[in-house]
Figure 1 (cartoon, rainbow, N blue to C red):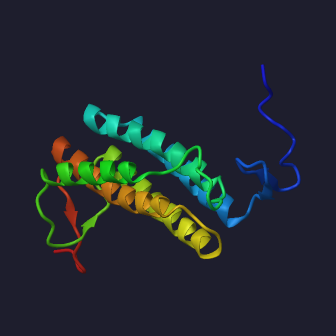
Figure 2: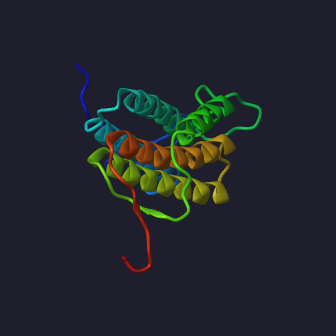
Length: 184
């Protein structure tokens, strides 16, 4: 059985898919770490999910996030095809889910507070982690080439997680808490 440790990271470096060693605090590894955390949060959400349809969507997202992480862990080289990369089809899938699920929700006229059922509130946490992953990836893109589909995917994913939180509350019969500057 293989060991769970390699001892190659003891000096604060880790390997990219290319085999290149980079500091563990590099922007590329920071972005990968945020995506990894997001996949874990979605797993946590799934442990409370009673909606089978939503759970299936979340499982697909977790699988996609492994592709996002692999894409981020591979430097873009001119003229070279990547083995694993985020595609436009993945983004279109998210957009289709957003449009389909949003159609069952009432339109919002004000902000809502992240609240409601346990699964819905955890989806809101996952949404904020997706936004953080997007920000880290944007920072990386300022200094290194990044597949633009990764940024689009993370952006749409946070929107889908927001819609999913609303859908879960609605299907559970939990009212949304509207934001007001002063509670009435």
